Length: 513
Image 1 (spheres, helix red, strand yellow):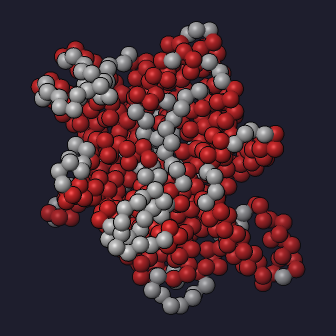
Image 2 (cartoon, rainbow, N blue to C red):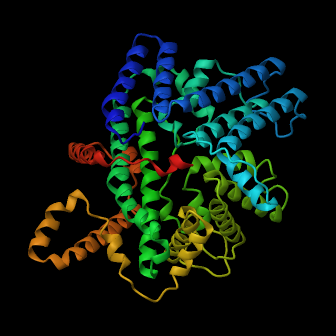
Image 3 (cartoon, rainbow, N blue to C red):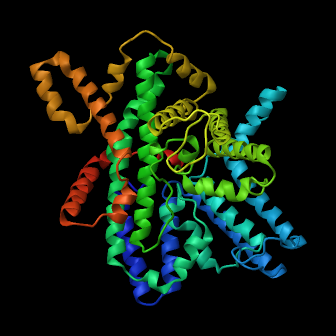
């Protein structure tokens, strides 16, 4: 089920809210949690009923493993109170840690990477192993990492074993189930255990609606519109000239930005409607003045996961500068592979890792707003922003292309000195309902000028996009702005506009990851 669909907005969400607050008001806290979990599983199974068995098996096996750990070993102190030098991990805890890693990474490997692995084995050894063509379960990367973090902390004695209903609600809570944020047990379970959080809070609910509608407008009105140009452009990869290539990658860049930003806003807004605080996952990364700063703002909870469960266990920065840089590169390489089973994602991750390593070394010479380190070649913040934004967009050649050959062609296109008119074809994809009247009037008055209308609309969209990324984002507006009557009316207008546009429903890009 999509956030940007009629069934979700007008049927699912009202039922979920009424049931949740109604049962809590009657003091039926366990039943309320079961109801919310059941609704979340309906939300998940709506895409494909077969997905339900996979997520339930994953939840059941992880919970059983946590239960076994609670029986075979005593839970140590909370991570915050644990001494810096702890005794060696007990044998059963080590076994539980190994089992948790094998279980979760095994499930993820089978469904997401098996065919990729076999394809490369066949290519490397001239073998002929059969591919399974496995259907990728929706959101498997997100709920697997979420449970993996819980099991690792359980095995290391950092957290306690929770009852099944709390655990089920923690994993399945629908706002974050499909595309994040990747939440930690200590962020969610205590909120569901707090009776005060189960009472309706008008302020939290109002700001949740405000944030949800802002996120919905990003997805429906901006991301999907940029997607019209991006999808057409990437289908024409081998016939683009330099200027059309630049506009195509910018279109995809803003599609990705507003798509993921919009989903994150909607997820946090939905959480607030249920009086649950979800962590910030997207903090205006296109404002960044350095690559390092960029990754402190983009997909924050994924970065947190890799830092906590990969970077630090590898040694972090404790084993010298060279090891720190190597660990950083490995994290980004794995991050690229996490996004998809293809060499294009690996190349994208490697490029980002190399850029962050160079940034850490000070070779690039860009200083972010909050960084005070010396650099041999100081670059002012505006130049740093341009450099960071350009490099990220160039990396998207790998991220969006279907093959390394196609990605290479896009780089070649940048060297083209010819103008073949593809830019007008790309702009013509913006034949959207909002400009219907203007288009009809122009076709009557000056038919030959219709292409320039689309070009004008395209340029106006890019100007609007740049304006939005440098001003208060939706989270900042929903958190700090007073909900005046004027703002509420604007939100109502945006909501109606989005609802009218839902006839062109599209999935979120991060559903693919």
